[in-house]
Image 1 (cartoon, rainbow, N blue to C red):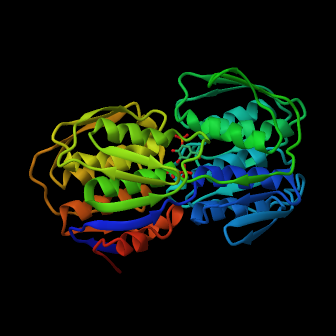
Image 2: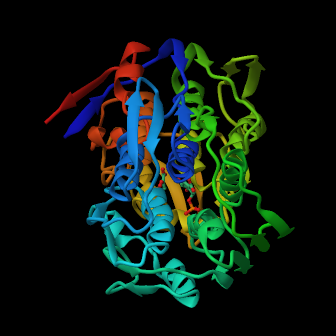
Image 3: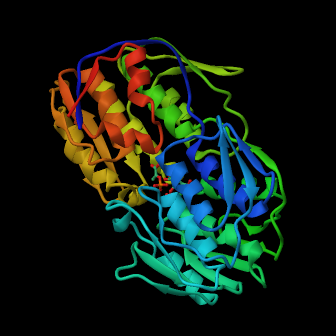
Length: 423
Ligand SMILES: O=C(O)C1=C[C@@H](OP(=O)(O)O)[C@@H](O)[C@H](O)C1
Ligand SMILES: C=C(OP(=O)(O)O)C(=O)O
């Protein structure tokens, strides 16, 4: 499928979706904690349904009630687990791999064609070093894991994905010895580790931070029944803010920003540096966007999912936007640095692609184009917003939004966007 996008102005009130990362973590931990644990205000999307399904395959009984899940029976370590297909969700397969290593029987984990290109090897090596047997032809899904891990000292590189570390932290308390974790090199996407630890604490487990983002100790413990309420999603909020910056008239974004760690909250500072004024009230956000944006240099090491919403702001910027330290954006649903470079160039932006980022500069003259989102949800949404600014564009793969923001297209249309979905 694809959609035709005309030049559009949007106005009105829109609610920010619930957070995908917290939904994943809270569902896994509620399912490990047991009976009557619940998670409220979940994001119900293809990725989080993959997490619910994975927990069910691990033996949990979970009920979905409106925007909550209630655990009727916990994950049963030792149960017979059929193949788990986590579809498009990197977070699900990485966390599920750690949980699978707690089982003595072999478990197969796989995903869709995009997930089958995403790295798993460093996590498999780490699990192997504490007693698992792991098989994969090229370090990517499908993978087979046979535990059970006993725990002990584990070293893992930090430069591919923080999800590997989140996975080890989550399974650590359930090992016989606990885990002494050392992260080698600079850790990418650091705030996602803080998010993992915050949810673990809610479910009654303590993580000892010896050196932040370098060394952690997790003693053997059990997860305790709790209720977790998912906050709004700053990655989705960034897309809404970017849409408003480029195409907004009077937009109010509803959502309480809360105080749980989220790396992508830095998008507010980025917008301010670009010259946008951001007004945050109790539970709503409004912005005022200038005629032209300033440029600037932005480090997305801790917030790789901001690459799509930030890069399209080059369309309205009078000076270059430089994005650095985000090589790990090449390891997502697509190689986002390469695809953004290829596609946004078509709109009249000059892009210098770097190994770990890009410099984007508007030529002053923008062109309509056919944009290929390669079935990557964040690229589709960013390209759609870009199309609303430039006009007369087509964007492929509107159905990809089911992964993180299922009603994105309907919401944009409700606010006045001229988007027509076709086969
Ligand atoms: O743990 C998480 O919920 C996530 C961590 C980040 O990935 P990396 O740690 O692989 O950069 C982020 O890009 C992804 O969308 C969600
Ligand atoms: C990379 C993402 O998620 P995941 O790693 O869970 O597939 C994302 O949502 O942009």
